[in-house]
Length: 171
Image 1: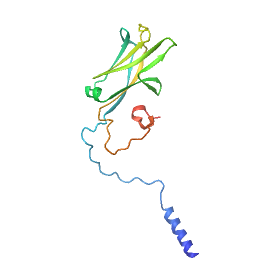
Image 2: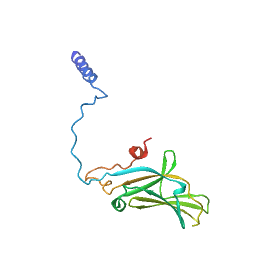
Image 3: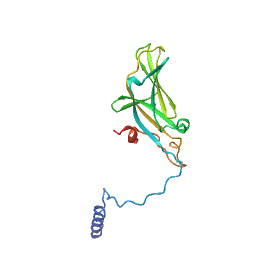
Image 4: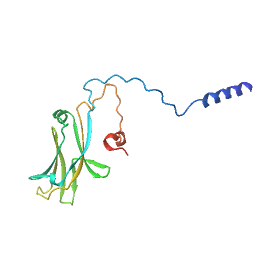
């Protein structure tokens, strides 16, 4: 009996000295730099195309967004994604079609060039239906190395918008 009380008291002392919230120790030394050309150059910004910016070239309107950092290499080997802002914190990816009725729609598409993203608005009747309104677009682009991974690196099966607060402002 005496041995079990001593053992029990020993366990109480051991477990009561453990912390659930460890104190952070001093910062360690900086790790080595990554390999050159490993990519990771991801850029995201919001651009406004005002009503006065749209230019009609039969049968479509074009709204150009100048992006000096969008290189030919990114356009040819990387990724350029464009999203339309549809609400305060809600974006939807282009291409996108708005169905105004069963017989009439307007489509937004994207053409990417070095230093330029062109938003294309085309109405289904291919006529000038009037200048599109002011719209905000999020343009995200990354170089060709940004999506590459080292051998043996695990990529999760699913990703969530909260995993990328730097692009979508978190929630």
